[in-house]
Amino acid sequence: MKNLTLYFIFISLFISCKNSEERKLKLTEKMIVAGENLIPSTPGATPSYWCTWGAQNYAVDSATIANSTFGIGGHSVIARNLTEARVFGKEGWAASYKKIQKDLYLMFDVGWDIPADMNFDDSRWKLGSQNVATDKFPSCTGTPVEKLKKLNELTKAAGWKGAGLWIPAHAWQEGKGGKMFSWKELESFFREKAKWANEAGIEYWKMDYGSRFGDLEFRKLVTKIAKEEAPKLWVEHCIGGGPLNDVECPWDCEAKGSGEFIRWCNGGKLKFAVDQLEFAQVLRTYDVTAYLSVPTTLDRVAQILNSCAGKNQISGILNCEDEPYIAATLGCMMGIMRHPAFLSQKSYAYDPLELRKRIDEVIRAVRWQRIAPAFGAGLTPMFIDSVRLTDTWAVKKGESWTTWLYGQTIKQSAPARVSRNMPLPVVKCEGDAPYVIASKHISGAISVATLMRHDTIKGFYFPLADVTVSVENYRFPIAAFGRYKSLTLNFQKLPAKFKILAQDLAGDIVYDITEMVEKKGNNLTFCGNLIKTVGLSAATDTDISEAGIVIKIIEN
Image (cartoon, rainbow, N blue to C red; front, top):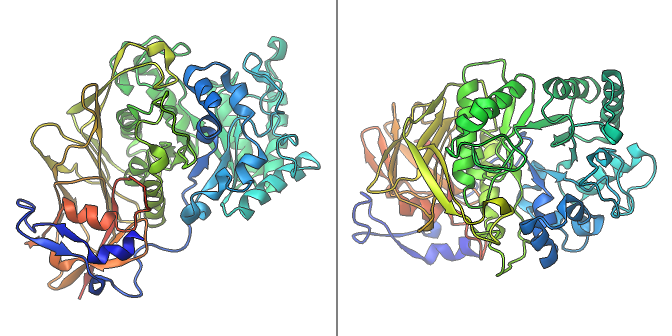
């Protein structure tokens, strides 16, 4: 185990972070603080989930990966892959994420209520029965409510918080033959389904595409009904559209190619997002590509939060999907897609970051949210840099399901710095900079993260920077994610005598690192190597996640 052998590893580290060869650091057993854990053992309240959709696409067989990459058979093919055996069988998908299962819903995506032989790509009205498909989930028998209850019980028995359910943005069979339901029929349908959910203990609906996708009044109605009939039921809405901001997509509005979220659909996408947050409990920032996920997601999150900032009536939270360090740092929830069972296929570069080997960073992000839960989009001030960084990607065959972009070079940009409820970080570096984000959470905790870049020539790369963040109160925990040349915490005040504790957010060992941190006035400077060393000290063998560390200042 890495956290055991680490005591005997020598790491190059110089306190000033200017010459890493002048001093070596030895993490020893004497540095362990016995009986201490900076991370609560109680699962967090943030309604994050792991979603089956990624596994349905990439954890079955090569034929399914080909379908997902080239869109050969549509969603009907992928829906067939969602079965009880694949989820709950021996070494099934539900067996992963052991450390954080109680923090997460297990989201059953498209396919849980669809018989295996049903094709629906040209007849979406077939979606949304909310009646568990017993041919695929044979343990779920009985009435519709009994089936849902058994699915939820299977999920909880496997260790998870509970079952979440994908639903379309329409009533079952609505749109068949071009016939749309009356408002009374819609209300009757969703009121019945909300009662089913309440009786079965279902606490999450992920509402996605459908014949009423863009209908705000419909989405508002479903949210209202859920609150009345199933008070514990979260209803998630979404911005929809293509996986790249203001880039051509066959089913979306005309794009200008700016790569900026605020310009997408002439501002229409941003407006649709903010309009939904006037009533939504959760808004999902929606699909992205594997190559430009960071700038695409960060720009969506930054612009939406900026448009909502200071509007206390907007208490809904953002779901930034499978960008765990953006979520953990900026107070969003997660809709995790990655899974260790993703298949490695040389013919398809669908997983360029090898997310199947980056499970620890999900664990770190989720465990941090036990300390600093996600919080409402309008509850705090928001700051975004006027400087934007631009990432690029030359799209090649076999890299993505965005087949219409083959041969094109795509750009996506995002603010260089983003912060919630605190000043922007100060960033100094030579050459390219990383994206740098930070927040002061509602709980008082502070988080900061650096995020990697992507370039057509360089591929993925991670520039190092000297980052400084301002901290008002030393008594609250601080999290740092990513890579640094150095991280300086500028406190308003520090006690006369104190010690500095640190812990890998994926582990349970606390280290006293007081003597490894440079102290100058009210500034504490942590070398990048120190953050990396402690922040990966509990890393799983073969995992390649970025570091994540929690720091606590304790007055002596």
